[in-house]
Image 1 (cartoon, rainbow, N blue to C red):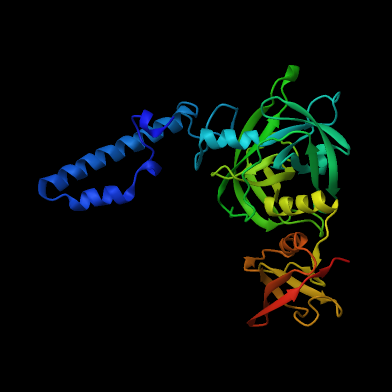
Image 2 (spheres, rainbow, N blue to C red):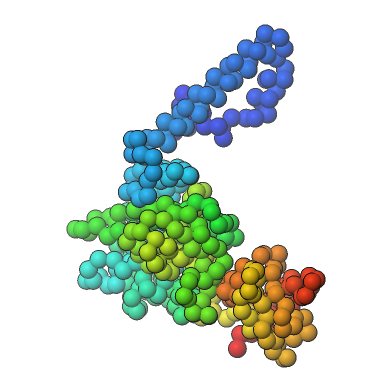
Length: 361
């Protein structure tokens, strides 16, 4: 509804400069009157915002772990507006193994025109699957390619669906709030039912516990222990997709960050495989600190004259490195020949260098 048709205004629609000018220009009783009017208006706006938020949540609910479609996604610590909720749902599809297959095996996120990113678990080894949009529209999809190391799969559909608003900078941090949405299949060919689940981020840039040494860095969240679907997106409180579900254990769920998903998807679309850069080192997680400790340097590799065994890489191109898996994920979406700035702790000093990535072995 346009502002001129409403009797209320959202705080973002107010012009702070005009309000400040009005208060500054007023003098004596006029200033007092303006302040009273301004305060009253602000209180009305806040009350209206609270009423709108409460309209989308269960009456009297103090905590809300999951919620069905048609409600504002409200948690004890954050609010996702109904509009952002609807926009996020439109960019998510459920995935069925084939036209005759019962139920759905996972979810996917629309990342481009006719392109859907998901995980290997969601496609269940199929080369052709069916995707179901939030509207209930069913579309045949072909598996363009899949990357076994990251677990990302790219699908092509013969239609254009709204693409997700994505955050490739991974701005979520430990302790922040997020929500996951699973597109649960509905009977009788009806539209899938999105179910939102609130969660708190417990780690960023680290592999899940017990993951193999070659695994990628992920965003791990903790929330209600509910049924999950591979490929379901993790959404921040601004409605941006932060990652897609790779695995779950109890109330913990691990998501591949969108920086990795988008980078791998681009390579799969253009080349059918991932061709990534390499520093020419082996690394491990340092004991008692973050970063990636260099264990061995290839004497003929890209970093042969820049890094030494024992160096702890802490930043790449200004981005903090949390673990060896985090470094692997960063380099995995960079092409050979890319020049990157590297910061490493060597003994008691910080070393800065530039390395031109070589091809992966």
